Length: 290
Image (cartoon, rainbow, N blue to C red; front, side, top):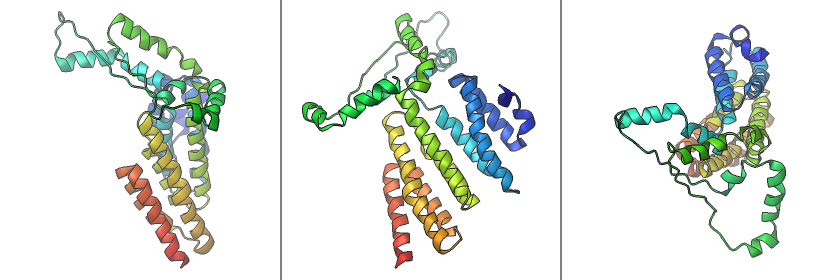
């Protein structure tokens, strides 16, 4: 609780509002300890900014905004919470102009795929099963090629529909042990390590990497694809460009120029964009090596 209560006194003005909103979001998402963990991560980047005077904590600002979004990823628990919030029913009633004496039904069309479902389960149970599904034996006996989904259409403002989603929100305490949590925190760890690494190269490159987490978004399949795009952006674009300039130029203007152009391509097209972005970086490196 100490870090949360000290936001007003310990952080520069341009970070206070961001951190306050992020902490509120993460307490609602999980709990106070989760928000404390967020601030601990932010402080690790804030120390980098303190070493670079005159930056106005831009790197920390970018990191703080995106880390809060990454840490509040939408899993089945979060979706259930949002679906049954009283404010949602109130907004629907107002938008549909439903009168006080009228009855209305809210039907939600949900179609979680297999990973969204087993992602809620403890990783210790899921990991060995997934390992088996990657084996040759399983692939021989499992004929189905299409991904499994579990379509549901609960009437969310009915007793049964509401209770179904409400019960799902009550397994929130399992989230830190889930398969999905481990996967998301692998991403967060990679993101944080990348910022630390490139801050030692060039401050602006580190800011570009911090900004790039904005490409991770969506739910289910969309999120998995954008996570892959993020990894490829850092590993296949920023990393080789920065390594080349570190070894040959000691200046990172090419990394910044091509990195920004690549980021724009990915932000605009995501999957097709990352393919084009990787090709762009590869062409630049090949020309430089020639």
